[in-house]
Length: 469
Ligand code: ZN
Image (cartoon, rainbow, N blue to C red; front, top):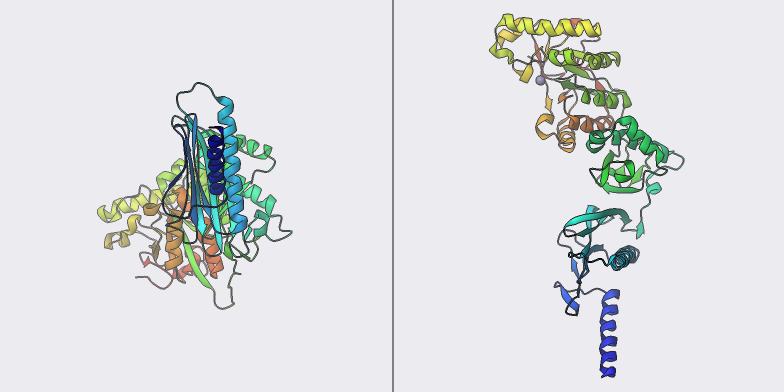
């Protein structure tokens, strides 16, 4: 009898080791060990989404604990080895923990490891691996790690690989990250910016995890470490343009082009922001404009200026153009000439009083203009030639794409300084415009009114530098 036991045992060990060292390359999940109380499955299948990637799954079901581990494999030795090491370490640690606890809990302890692909191309893979330990559906611990791999060289990409030597990138990113994190909704909801900065500065190496998505660098922060309770991690994003000073010319984020400013070939656009001032977003937009040394035109709403005169003051102090967007945002085409005049005048006087500047331009709400409006308003009426529809998408990528696909020399671009997503989009739009060789100017500069005030015609409707009627 003893002999039979030993043979069975040897066979069982053999099967288990075999499955640990190479994968089962069929498309079905195979049961590789079965006792009454525990089962271990292992399978490796080609990913349906990412050609060239395999997904290895290991599943163990026991009476006291179970685990499900999914790992991306590439048939590249260094990557696959690292994934195996990670999976094995996580499972070993988990089993140890589960066996140490061994309390009489009804529900078994459960480990889950899964991954999220941020980028996958022939050259490159960027992956986040997420681990969670739970019991009875209640998560007890969550951790993650990030992995970036150059499929050509077969090597992992390390953070410093992205940056120019001697560029002080670490210091710069640490600072930039702090100012982005302060604006993160989870941070804003829980901490004052002073408290958050204190927490952030107390961490020795806050930047530990990075991922890459298209031409964006994503940094992930452990929320708990920063004193944030409501989420597990905080994610912030940088476009390659924001990091142009410190990034190497060619990285997995793409190539950094020099601005194509050839003399005599200057292209101009005017950025306009409507409906503000807003107590937070206008400041964010001013910060971005300042960072790139750009001037914009703010079409201010009287009622909002009355609520936030200090914001309006800063807009004026930083050299931006302030236009009138009426007092109360009425449909000007539906009210009398007298009412139009009153509404515009009220906003004019308030703005003049706060900033010392009389608005030289009017943007009619909704762009609605008719003969009555033209007769009533003693200023150029500024519409637009490029509508970002930022209020509709409220998505920085969508706003950026609108500009990228539509912009042309002489455009007046409309946005709103009331939407946080517009401020985020501006971080993408502005450096991109510069890279394309655009100069970003105010509406009066674009239309030549600054240099030749007599060009500004009251009641005339302007869409762009070349289109007016
Ligand atoms: Zn408006």
